[in-house]
Length: 233
Ligand SMILES: Nc1ncnc2c1ncn2[C@@H]1O[C@H](COP(=O)(O)OP(=O)(O)OP(=O)(O)O)[C@@H](O)[C@H]1O
Ligand SMILES: [Mg+2]
Image (tube, rainbow, N blue to C red; front, top):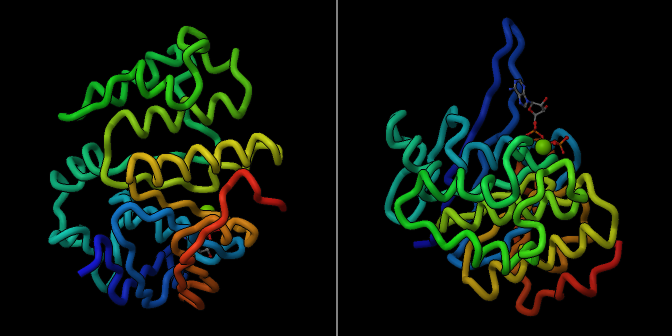
């Protein structure tokens, strides 16, 4: 059994009379510690898949498993606990609290979980020791994304879910963020899922899942993934 399994997962959004089949019976698995790249065009269903995996959206049909638990059957209370303890989220536009400093943004997350990592240590890992007392508006986009990643890592989750984490960043800064995420998987053994529309990212994944119109069109593993440092796009 794999760490994470999607078994025939479907998602239909209903808006009035209109139904959109965003995810059409998807199957894939993820092993613990992998860096996973989920790639596909705009509207393919990537965010929908990530939101269901992160317990932020329900499935219409099928099941999602992590370890021995069926996440897709969790009740409201179990979902709150799952999102809090097991999942770290990283978004395209960082979602930091503007009137809290770097350190306070990270503390905000670590305070709510049972086994947090030391904030100062995590901020050191992401290279923000010198920016601990700055507010988000005083940081560059790349630095703000590092704060967001530190915030997610400090919760010490089983799973890090990143939706277009480099989408708002220039090439060089984006590459540094990918390297940080790759190191988080390689050095700390965390399972990291990155969503992107950029097929160039496929090279760095231990596992690649290609999505098109709500279906998985390809799933493969890279036995020797490229280092994020050398990536070109
Ligand atoms: N809350 C919602 N209500 C109705 N339709 C939705 C909702 N969320 C997503 N959809 C639809 O589901 C499909 C998949 O959307 P999704 O956001 O998962 O795509 P995506 O691959 O993340 O795209 P992008 O790269 O643009 O972020 C799209 O057709 C979208 O319009
Ligand atoms: Mg999306």
